[in-house]
View 1 (cartoon, protein in one colour):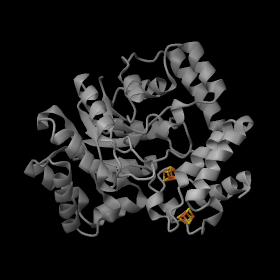
View 2 (cartoon, protein in one colour):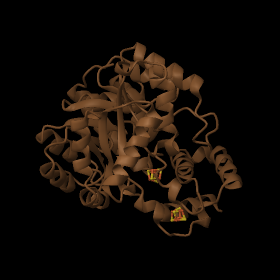
View 3 (cartoon, rainbow, N blue to C red):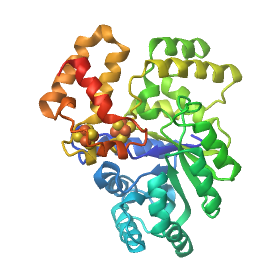
Length: 367
Ligand code: SF4
Ligand code: SF4
């Protein structure tokens, strides 16, 4: 159980199209099992599932468990803040939604070049320190999606923060776009606790191309693809918590598997697998859905990318995938409807050129 955290970004839903339709029978079962096996860390944010993820904390945890049974991390939406008063208003709402009177960990959500400027201009870092002195946040920090250079700048300017949440997985570790290893090393050098998000890259590393799967199976036939990814993140010495979305019983049980450190041979097998996955993943979308809320046409962007990636990996089974694509186009706007306004791209932590990729999707499926 060591280091595992329960992420509330992707929760079990009764209706995949309705982010408020949380299936509490499943969620409560998963939370109970996680706690029974020694898990304590839960992570949510103001914007996850349009606010429903914070309400789920209240329903599944604070209404059912004493406060010291769980460690709760929440995040301030840095991009929505216009003044320090906004910080306070949102924070109070978060406490109320979650049914708690303090957070164990409180982070500025999603610092990048733009949001960092907002955070400095609006006194968000001072606000974190106020919360700490009031006992309303035990540890403070930020989640981060940008370059190692910016991370160095922020950590040098704010030595008072305790932890950093980084996107780390074996696919992004040496990726020139994400530079996860460099970010990890900077946070480590500054002596920060490192919380890992997206260790399975939104599910991408749970379902591998055949060639990558074979490399890993040869090395260790017992370990599932998702467990390999979780082990990679847990293996890093400065990582204190590895967040994993657990929206099914199978996923939870996989994550609960006993952790064993990776050998040198296993690490090189993972790097070989990463090369294959990179060459076979058409669009590196993690399914976080940050783009969906801003699209004027409400195009289900991650769903189209999921279908497209599946098609790119298995073109021989294209007919099955076309069926899923048609179903999406019947219920929602099509990729070809995209207005190319690029609002979604400003919100994409993976820096995907969404509008260009949607055009490719439309071309491949023919409509
Ligand atoms: S570029 Fe296309 S997909 Fe993105 S927000 Fe605009 S209309 Fe939606
Ligand atoms: S396109 Fe970007 S913002 Fe949208 S779901 Fe994928 S990774 Fe997230």
